[in-house]
Image (tube, rainbow, N blue to C red):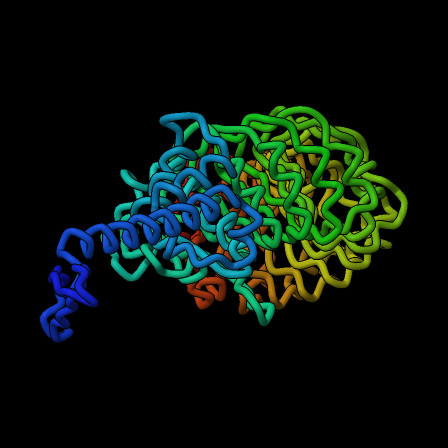
Length: 489
Protein backbone atom coordinates (compact mmCIF):
# COMPACT_ATOMS: atom_id res chain seq x y z
CA UNK A 1 0.00 0.00 0.00
CA UNK A 2 1.36 3.50 -0.93
CA UNK A 3 0.31 6.91 0.37
CA UNK A 4 0.33 10.40 -1.50
CA UNK A 5 -0.98 13.85 -0.68
CA UNK A 6 -3.12 16.05 -3.00
CA UNK A 7 -4.66 19.66 -2.58
CA UNK A 8 -8.19 20.65 -3.76
CA UNK A 9 -10.71 23.47 -3.05
CA UNK A 10 -14.00 22.90 -1.32
CA UNK A 11 -16.44 25.83 -0.88
CA UNK A 12 -13.63 28.13 -1.77
CA UNK A 13 -11.32 26.75 0.80
CA UNK A 14 -8.30 24.70 0.22
CA UNK A 15 -8.66 21.31 1.76
CA UNK A 16 -5.98 18.70 2.13
CA UNK A 17 -6.94 15.31 0.78
CA UNK A 18 -5.18 11.89 0.86
CA UNK A 19 -5.05 9.56 -2.04
CA UNK A 20 -4.51 5.92 -1.39
CA UNK A 21 -2.99 3.72 -4.03
CA UNK A 22 -3.35 0.00 -3.44
CA UNK A 23 -0.49 -2.18 -4.61
CA UNK A 24 -1.43 -5.75 -5.48
CA UNK A 25 -0.51 -8.25 -2.69
CA UNK A 26 1.64 -10.29 -4.97
CA UNK A 27 4.24 -7.63 -4.81
CA UNK A 28 4.64 -7.82 -1.01
CA UNK A 29 7.77 -9.87 0.27
CA UNK A 30 6.49 -12.08 3.15
CA UNK A 31 9.27 -14.85 3.02
CA UNK A 32 11.57 -15.01 6.17
CA UNK A 33 15.18 -14.24 5.55
CA UNK A 34 17.87 -17.03 5.44
CA UNK A 35 19.36 -15.70 8.65
CA UNK A 36 16.06 -16.12 10.48
CA UNK A 37 15.70 -19.72 9.32
CA UNK A 38 19.24 -20.55 10.46
CA UNK A 39 18.52 -19.23 13.93
CA UNK A 40 15.41 -21.38 14.25
CA UNK A 41 17.21 -24.53 13.03
CA UNK A 42 20.14 -24.03 15.39
CA UNK A 43 17.82 -23.44 18.30
CA UNK A 44 16.01 -26.74 17.62
CA UNK A 45 19.31 -28.58 17.37
CA UNK A 46 20.52 -27.15 20.67
CA UNK A 47 17.30 -28.15 22.42
CA UNK A 48 17.47 -31.69 20.99
CA UNK A 49 21.11 -32.08 22.04
CA UNK A 50 20.33 -30.80 25.50
CA UNK A 51 17.49 -33.28 25.81
CA UNK A 52 19.69 -36.22 24.76
CA UNK A 53 22.44 -35.08 27.13
CA UNK A 54 20.00 -34.98 30.04
CA UNK A 55 18.79 -38.50 29.23
CA UNK A 56 22.35 -39.85 29.09
CA UNK A 57 23.25 -38.19 32.40
CA UNK A 58 20.18 -39.70 34.02
CA UNK A 59 21.04 -43.16 32.66
CA UNK A 60 24.65 -42.99 33.78
CA UNK A 61 23.77 -41.74 37.24
CA UNK A 62 20.95 -44.19 37.74
CA UNK A 63 23.62 -46.83 38.48
CA UNK A 64 22.90 -50.36 39.46
CA UNK A 65 19.15 -50.02 39.91
CA UNK A 66 18.44 -48.88 36.38
CA UNK A 67 20.81 -51.49 34.91
CA UNK A 68 19.36 -54.29 36.98
CA UNK A 69 15.90 -53.29 35.75
CA UNK A 70 16.92 -54.17 32.23
CA UNK A 71 18.29 -50.97 30.71
CA UNK A 72 19.74 -51.81 27.32
CA UNK A 73 23.46 -51.37 27.77
CA UNK A 74 23.84 -50.96 24.02
CA UNK A 75 22.67 -47.36 24.40
CA UNK A 76 25.14 -46.69 27.19
CA UNK A 77 28.70 -45.91 26.12
CA UNK A 78 31.48 -48.29 27.10
CA UNK A 79 33.10 -45.72 29.35
CA UNK A 80 29.90 -45.57 31.36
CA UNK A 81 29.79 -49.37 31.54
CA UNK A 82 33.41 -49.36 32.69
CA UNK A 83 32.53 -46.86 35.42
CA UNK A 84 29.67 -49.09 36.54
CA UNK A 85 32.00 -52.12 36.74
CA UNK A 86 34.57 -50.16 38.72
CA UNK A 87 31.93 -49.07 41.21
CA UNK A 88 30.56 -52.62 41.50
CA UNK A 89 33.82 -54.54 42.03
CA UNK A 90 36.26 -51.83 43.17
CA UNK A 91 39.50 -53.53 42.02
CA UNK A 92 43.04 -52.49 42.78
CA UNK A 93 44.91 -51.21 39.71
CA UNK A 94 47.02 -53.64 37.68
CA UNK A 95 45.47 -56.74 39.24
CA UNK A 96 43.64 -59.67 37.61
CA UNK A 97 40.43 -58.02 38.80
CA UNK A 98 41.35 -54.80 37.03
CA UNK A 99 42.26 -56.71 33.87
CA UNK A 100 38.91 -58.50 34.00
CA UNK A 101 36.95 -55.26 34.23
CA UNK A 102 38.88 -53.75 31.32
CA UNK A 103 38.13 -56.77 29.14
CA UNK A 104 34.45 -56.83 30.09
CA UNK A 105 34.03 -53.11 29.40
CA UNK A 106 36.03 -52.59 26.23
CA UNK A 107 36.35 -55.97 24.49
CA UNK A 108 33.40 -58.09 25.55
CA UNK A 109 29.81 -57.36 24.61
CA UNK A 110 28.11 -55.44 27.45
CA UNK A 111 25.52 -57.45 29.35
CA UNK A 112 21.93 -56.38 29.88
CA UNK A 113 18.60 -57.80 30.92
CA UNK A 114 16.84 -58.89 34.06
CA UNK A 115 19.51 -61.46 34.96
CA UNK A 116 22.34 -58.96 34.53
CA UNK A 117 23.62 -59.18 38.10
CA UNK A 118 23.90 -62.99 38.12
CA UNK A 119 25.38 -63.10 34.62
CA UNK A 120 27.88 -60.40 35.39
CA UNK A 121 29.02 -62.01 38.66
CA UNK A 122 29.69 -65.39 37.12
CA UNK A 123 31.28 -63.94 33.98
CA UNK A 124 33.47 -61.64 36.05
CA UNK A 125 34.53 -64.57 38.26
CA UNK A 126 35.67 -66.60 35.25
CA UNK A 127 37.54 -63.74 33.64
CA UNK A 128 39.38 -63.00 36.91
CA UNK A 129 40.23 -66.70 37.23
CA UNK A 130 41.66 -66.63 33.70
CA UNK A 131 43.95 -63.69 34.39
CA UNK A 132 44.83 -64.78 37.95
CA UNK A 133 45.94 -68.26 36.91
CA UNK A 134 48.01 -67.50 33.83
CA UNK A 135 45.34 -68.01 31.21
CA UNK A 136 46.91 -65.62 28.75
CA UNK A 137 50.28 -67.39 28.96
CA UNK A 138 49.83 -71.05 29.90
CA UNK A 139 46.40 -72.10 28.62
CA UNK A 140 47.85 -72.78 25.20
CA UNK A 141 45.39 -75.33 23.87
CA UNK A 142 42.49 -73.22 25.12
CA UNK A 143 43.85 -70.05 23.55
CA UNK A 144 44.52 -71.81 20.25
CA UNK A 145 41.01 -73.24 20.01
CA UNK A 146 38.45 -70.66 18.78
CA UNK A 147 35.63 -72.89 19.95
CA UNK A 148 36.74 -73.17 23.56
CA UNK A 149 35.45 -69.75 24.60
CA UNK A 150 37.33 -67.90 27.32
CA UNK A 151 39.07 -64.59 26.76
CA UNK A 152 41.55 -65.12 23.95
CA UNK A 153 39.64 -67.81 22.08
CA UNK A 154 36.31 -66.56 20.86
CA UNK A 155 34.73 -65.84 24.22
CA UNK A 156 33.50 -62.36 23.26
CA UNK A 157 29.73 -62.39 23.29
CA UNK A 158 29.64 -66.17 23.92
CA UNK A 159 27.72 -67.24 27.01
CA UNK A 160 30.16 -68.26 29.73
CA UNK A 161 28.31 -71.57 30.12
CA UNK A 162 29.61 -72.48 26.66
CA UNK A 163 33.26 -72.04 27.67
CA UNK A 164 35.34 -75.21 27.91
CA UNK A 165 35.48 -76.77 31.36
CA UNK A 166 32.36 -74.92 32.55
CA UNK A 167 29.20 -76.84 33.43
CA UNK A 168 25.83 -75.15 33.85
CA UNK A 169 22.21 -75.85 34.63
CA UNK A 170 19.15 -74.09 33.26
CA UNK A 171 16.50 -73.04 35.74
CA UNK A 172 14.13 -71.93 33.00
CA UNK A 173 15.02 -68.25 33.08
CA UNK A 174 18.83 -68.26 33.19
CA UNK A 175 21.87 -70.51 32.91
CA UNK A 176 23.86 -70.88 36.13
CA UNK A 177 27.38 -72.24 36.56
CA UNK A 178 27.27 -75.46 38.60
CA UNK A 179 30.65 -77.01 37.82
CA UNK A 180 34.25 -76.10 36.98
CA UNK A 181 36.60 -78.72 35.51
CA UNK A 182 39.93 -76.93 35.47
CA UNK A 183 42.29 -79.73 34.50
CA UNK A 184 45.11 -80.47 32.11
CA UNK A 185 42.72 -82.69 30.16
CA UNK A 186 40.73 -79.54 29.40
CA UNK A 187 43.88 -77.73 28.29
CA UNK A 188 43.92 -75.62 31.44
CA UNK A 189 47.21 -75.29 33.32
CA UNK A 190 46.73 -73.12 36.38
CA UNK A 191 49.57 -70.98 37.70
CA UNK A 192 49.84 -68.34 40.40
CA UNK A 193 50.33 -68.22 44.14
CA UNK A 194 46.72 -67.54 45.14
CA UNK A 195 43.48 -69.31 44.46
CA UNK A 196 40.99 -66.94 42.90
CA UNK A 197 38.72 -65.57 45.62
CA UNK A 198 36.12 -64.60 42.99
CA UNK A 199 35.17 -68.26 42.64
CA UNK A 200 33.12 -67.46 45.74
CA UNK A 201 30.77 -65.48 43.44
CA UNK A 202 29.64 -68.77 41.87
CA UNK A 203 27.13 -69.53 44.59
CA UNK A 204 25.38 -72.23 42.53
CA UNK A 205 28.62 -74.22 42.15
CA UNK A 206 28.23 -77.91 42.95
CA UNK A 207 31.56 -79.34 41.79
CA UNK A 208 35.02 -77.78 41.69
CA UNK A 209 37.91 -79.73 40.17
CA UNK A 210 41.35 -78.08 40.33
CA UNK A 211 43.52 -81.17 40.85
CA UNK A 212 47.07 -81.88 39.63
CA UNK A 213 47.92 -78.23 39.03
CA UNK A 214 50.80 -77.58 41.47
CA UNK A 215 49.09 -74.46 42.84
CA UNK A 216 50.89 -72.89 45.78
CA UNK A 217 48.15 -71.21 47.76
CA UNK A 218 45.71 -71.46 50.64
CA UNK A 219 41.99 -72.08 50.49
CA UNK A 220 40.34 -68.61 50.45
CA UNK A 221 37.85 -67.68 53.14
CA UNK A 222 35.75 -66.08 50.36
CA UNK A 223 34.80 -69.59 49.29
CA UNK A 224 32.53 -69.87 52.32
CA UNK A 225 29.70 -68.74 50.02
CA UNK A 226 29.86 -72.02 48.04
CA UNK A 227 27.20 -73.60 50.20
CA UNK A 228 25.83 -75.76 47.35
CA UNK A 229 29.18 -77.48 46.79
CA UNK A 230 29.04 -81.27 46.61
CA UNK A 231 32.56 -82.14 45.38
CA UNK A 232 35.78 -80.28 46.15
CA UNK A 233 38.91 -81.65 44.47
CA UNK A 234 42.17 -79.78 45.09
CA UNK A 235 44.36 -82.90 45.24
CA UNK A 236 48.00 -82.96 44.17
CA UNK A 237 48.73 -79.25 44.49
CA UNK A 238 50.78 -77.36 47.05
CA UNK A 239 47.94 -76.02 49.17
CA UNK A 240 49.44 -74.58 52.33
CA UNK A 241 46.69 -74.10 54.89
CA UNK A 242 44.45 -75.88 57.32
CA UNK A 243 41.15 -77.42 56.33
CA UNK A 244 38.65 -74.53 56.58
CA UNK A 245 36.03 -74.78 59.30
CA UNK A 246 33.38 -73.49 56.91
CA UNK A 247 33.38 -76.78 55.00
CA UNK A 248 31.32 -78.13 57.87
CA UNK A 249 28.57 -75.67 56.93
CA UNK A 250 28.21 -77.15 53.44
CA UNK A 251 25.34 -79.54 54.01
CA UNK A 252 25.48 -80.85 50.43
CA UNK A 253 29.21 -81.62 50.55
CA UNK A 254 29.90 -85.30 49.85
CA UNK A 255 33.53 -85.54 48.71
CA UNK A 256 36.60 -83.62 49.91
CA UNK A 257 39.74 -84.57 47.99
CA UNK A 258 42.80 -82.82 49.40
CA UNK A 259 45.48 -85.50 49.11
CA UNK A 260 48.99 -84.66 47.96
CA UNK A 261 49.23 -81.14 49.39
CA UNK A 262 50.99 -79.36 52.24
CA UNK A 263 48.05 -79.13 54.62
CA UNK A 264 48.66 -78.93 58.34
CA UNK A 265 46.72 -78.72 61.58
CA UNK A 266 43.86 -80.80 62.87
CA UNK A 267 40.86 -82.07 60.99
CA UNK A 268 38.21 -79.53 62.09
CA UNK A 269 35.48 -80.63 64.45
CA UNK A 270 33.00 -78.82 62.17
CA UNK A 271 33.11 -81.90 59.92
CA UNK A 272 31.54 -84.01 62.68
CA UNK A 273 28.05 -85.20 61.72
CA UNK A 274 28.57 -83.88 58.20
CA UNK A 275 27.30 -85.60 55.07
CA UNK A 276 30.81 -86.22 53.74
CA UNK A 277 31.13 -89.68 52.24
CA UNK A 278 34.66 -89.50 50.83
CA UNK A 279 37.61 -87.84 52.57
CA UNK A 280 41.10 -87.98 51.04
CA UNK A 281 43.93 -86.46 53.08
CA UNK A 282 46.85 -88.73 52.11
CA UNK A 283 50.36 -87.35 51.69
CA UNK A 284 49.83 -84.34 53.94
CA UNK A 285 52.45 -85.02 56.59
CA UNK A 286 51.29 -82.09 58.73
CA UNK A 287 47.69 -83.26 59.01
CA UNK A 288 46.72 -84.40 62.49
CA UNK A 289 43.72 -86.01 64.08
CA UNK A 290 42.44 -89.10 65.83
CA UNK A 291 41.39 -92.01 63.64
CA UNK A 292 38.83 -93.23 66.17
CA UNK A 293 37.18 -89.80 66.17
CA UNK A 294 37.07 -89.62 62.40
CA UNK A 295 35.52 -93.03 62.00
CA UNK A 296 32.87 -92.56 64.66
CA UNK A 297 31.92 -88.88 64.25
CA UNK A 298 31.26 -88.88 60.49
CA UNK A 299 28.35 -91.31 60.13
CA UNK A 300 28.21 -91.28 56.32
CA UNK A 301 31.95 -91.67 55.72
CA UNK A 302 32.50 -94.60 53.34
CA UNK A 303 36.03 -93.84 52.08
CA UNK A 304 38.90 -92.50 54.18
CA UNK A 305 42.56 -92.15 53.19
CA UNK A 306 44.95 -90.79 55.82
CA UNK A 307 48.07 -92.51 54.49
CA UNK A 308 51.37 -90.66 55.09
CA UNK A 309 49.82 -88.22 57.54
CA UNK A 310 50.27 -87.59 61.25
CA UNK A 311 46.83 -88.98 62.06
CA UNK A 312 47.17 -91.18 65.11
CA UNK A 313 45.09 -93.19 67.55
CA UNK A 314 43.54 -96.65 67.61
CA UNK A 315 41.05 -98.31 65.35
CA UNK A 316 37.72 -98.26 67.19
CA UNK A 317 36.17 -101.47 68.37
CA UNK A 318 32.71 -100.05 67.79
CA UNK A 319 30.80 -100.63 64.57
CA UNK A 320 31.61 -98.37 61.63
CA UNK A 321 28.67 -99.20 59.43
CA UNK A 322 29.21 -96.96 56.40
CA UNK A 323 32.97 -97.46 55.94
CA UNK A 324 33.92 -99.30 52.74
CA UNK A 325 37.56 -98.35 52.23
CA UNK A 326 40.19 -97.37 54.77
CA UNK A 327 43.73 -96.39 53.73
CA UNK A 328 46.12 -95.61 56.58
CA UNK A 329 49.59 -96.84 55.64
CA UNK A 330 52.44 -94.62 56.80
CA UNK A 331 50.27 -92.99 59.45
CA UNK A 332 50.73 -92.98 63.22
CA UNK A 333 47.89 -95.32 64.01
CA UNK A 334 49.00 -97.88 66.59
CA UNK A 335 47.66 -101.02 68.20
CA UNK A 336 46.08 -104.04 66.58
CA UNK A 337 43.19 -104.46 64.23
CA UNK A 338 40.21 -105.03 66.53
CA UNK A 339 38.41 -108.33 66.30
CA UNK A 340 35.20 -106.29 66.11
CA UNK A 341 36.24 -105.32 62.58
CA UNK A 342 33.88 -108.07 61.46
CA UNK A 343 31.01 -105.69 62.27
CA UNK A 344 32.32 -103.19 59.69
CA UNK A 345 30.04 -104.88 57.21
CA UNK A 346 30.68 -102.52 54.30
CA UNK A 347 34.48 -102.47 54.47
CA UNK A 348 35.76 -103.16 50.97
CA UNK A 349 39.43 -102.15 51.17
CA UNK A 350 41.84 -101.65 54.03
CA UNK A 351 45.37 -100.41 54.46
CA UNK A 352 45.74 -100.61 58.20
CA UNK A 353 48.23 -101.90 60.71
CA UNK A 354 48.62 -104.43 63.49
CA UNK A 355 48.00 -108.15 63.39
CA UNK A 356 45.31 -109.53 61.12
CA UNK A 357 42.50 -110.97 63.24
CA UNK A 358 40.72 -114.03 62.00
CA UNK A 359 37.49 -112.03 62.13
CA UNK A 360 38.68 -110.17 59.00
CA UNK A 361 37.46 -113.21 57.10
CA UNK A 362 33.90 -112.22 58.03
CA UNK A 363 33.98 -109.01 55.99
CA UNK A 364 31.73 -109.90 53.03
CA UNK A 365 32.65 -106.93 50.83
CA UNK A 366 36.41 -106.82 51.31
CA UNK A 367 38.10 -106.53 47.92
CA UNK A 368 41.62 -105.39 48.78
CA UNK A 369 43.97 -105.56 51.74
CA UNK A 370 47.19 -103.57 51.63
CA UNK A 371 49.24 -103.78 54.80
CA UNK A 372 52.62 -103.18 53.16
CA UNK A 373 55.43 -101.36 54.97
CA UNK A 374 53.64 -101.44 58.30
CA UNK A 375 54.33 -102.97 61.69
CA UNK A 376 52.43 -106.14 60.84
CA UNK A 377 53.27 -109.42 62.50
CA UNK A 378 51.92 -112.85 63.30
CA UNK A 379 50.82 -115.58 60.94
CA UNK A 380 48.52 -115.17 57.97
CA UNK A 381 44.99 -116.13 59.05
CA UNK A 382 43.47 -118.90 56.97
CA UNK A 383 40.07 -117.20 57.41
CA UNK A 384 41.00 -114.72 54.68
CA UNK A 385 40.20 -117.52 52.26
CA UNK A 386 36.53 -116.82 53.00
CA UNK A 387 36.74 -113.44 51.31
CA UNK A 388 35.15 -114.39 48.01
CA UNK A 389 35.51 -110.89 46.55
CA UNK A 390 39.17 -110.33 47.55
CA UNK A 391 41.23 -109.33 44.53
CA UNK A 392 44.40 -107.96 46.13
CA UNK A 393 46.37 -109.04 49.20
CA UNK A 394 49.52 -106.94 49.66
CA UNK A 395 51.62 -107.65 52.76
CA UNK A 396 55.19 -106.83 51.73
CA UNK A 397 57.88 -105.39 54.01
CA UNK A 398 56.38 -106.60 57.29
CA UNK A 399 57.17 -109.18 59.97
CA UNK A 400 54.82 -112.03 59.13
CA UNK A 401 55.94 -115.52 60.00
CA UNK A 402 54.87 -119.03 59.12
CA UNK A 403 53.88 -120.67 55.85
CA UNK A 404 51.64 -119.69 52.98
CA UNK A 405 48.12 -120.97 53.79
CA UNK A 406 46.98 -123.62 51.34
CA UNK A 407 43.43 -122.33 51.81
CA UNK A 408 44.27 -119.16 49.84
CA UNK A 409 43.89 -121.27 46.69
CA UNK A 410 40.13 -120.78 47.22
CA UNK A 411 40.45 -117.07 46.47
CA UNK A 412 39.13 -117.32 42.93
CA UNK A 413 39.11 -113.55 42.34
CA UNK A 414 42.61 -112.88 43.70
CA UNK A 415 44.76 -111.03 41.15
CA UNK A 416 47.66 -109.87 43.36
CA UNK A 417 49.40 -111.78 46.16
CA UNK A 418 52.42 -109.99 47.56
CA UNK A 419 54.37 -111.22 50.61
CA UNK A 420 57.80 -109.96 49.48
CA UNK A 421 60.34 -109.01 52.15
CA UNK A 422 58.81 -110.98 55.00
CA UNK A 423 61.88 -112.84 56.26
CA UNK A 424 59.86 -114.98 58.64
CA UNK A 425 57.87 -116.66 55.89
CA UNK A 426 59.15 -120.17 55.06
CA UNK A 427 58.14 -123.48 53.53
CA UNK A 428 57.02 -124.36 50.01
CA UNK A 429 54.66 -122.65 47.59
CA UNK A 430 51.44 -124.70 47.87
CA UNK A 431 50.85 -126.63 44.64
CA UNK A 432 47.14 -125.81 45.00
CA UNK A 433 47.95 -122.24 43.92
CA UNK A 434 48.00 -123.47 40.32
CA UNK A 435 44.19 -123.40 40.54
CA UNK A 436 44.09 -119.64 41.12
CA UNK A 437 42.97 -118.78 37.59
CA UNK A 438 42.63 -115.01 38.24
CA UNK A 439 46.13 -114.64 39.67
CA UNK A 440 48.40 -112.37 37.60
CA UNK A 441 51.01 -111.07 40.05
CA UNK A 442 52.79 -113.21 42.65
CA UNK A 443 55.63 -111.64 44.64
CA UNK A 444 57.55 -114.05 46.90
CA UNK A 445 61.11 -112.67 46.95
CA UNK A 446 62.86 -111.62 50.15
CA UNK A 447 61.43 -114.54 52.11
CA UNK A 448 62.71 -117.93 53.31
CA UNK A 449 60.42 -119.95 51.02
CA UNK A 450 62.05 -123.10 49.65
CA UNK A 451 61.41 -126.20 47.57
CA UNK A 452 60.28 -126.45 43.98
CA UNK A 453 57.48 -124.51 42.40
CA UNK A 454 54.98 -126.91 40.85
CA UNK A 455 55.13 -126.85 37.02
CA UNK A 456 51.39 -126.26 37.01
CA UNK A 457 52.06 -122.72 38.18
CA UNK A 458 53.64 -122.01 34.80
CA UNK A 459 50.31 -122.63 33.08
CA UNK A 460 48.95 -119.51 34.79
CA UNK A 461 51.24 -117.34 32.63
CA UNK A 462 51.72 -114.82 35.40
CA UNK A 463 52.61 -111.26 34.45
CA UNK A 464 54.91 -110.97 37.46
CA UNK A 465 56.28 -113.95 39.38
CA UNK A 466 59.26 -113.10 41.59
CA UNK A 467 61.13 -115.37 44.00
CA UNK A 468 64.53 -116.09 45.50
CA UNK A 469 65.21 -118.67 42.84
CA UNK A 470 68.98 -118.25 42.62
CA UNK A 471 70.82 -120.77 44.76
CA UNK A 472 72.02 -119.21 47.99
CA UNK A 473 73.19 -122.05 50.18
CA UNK A 474 70.82 -124.06 52.30
CA UNK A 475 67.68 -122.22 51.24
CA UNK A 476 66.65 -122.43 47.59
CA UNK A 477 63.39 -122.03 45.70
CA UNK A 478 63.47 -123.70 42.33
CA UNK A 479 61.26 -121.84 39.84
CA UNK A 480 61.32 -122.49 36.10
CA UNK A 481 58.75 -119.84 35.14
CA UNK A 482 59.58 -116.96 37.44
CA UNK A 483 59.74 -113.64 35.61
CA UNK A 484 62.50 -112.37 37.93
CA UNK A 485 64.85 -114.17 40.28
CA UNK A 486 66.48 -112.64 43.36
CA UNK A 487 69.43 -113.76 45.43
CA UNK A 488 69.30 -112.00 48.76
CA UNK A 489 71.89 -112.73 51.49
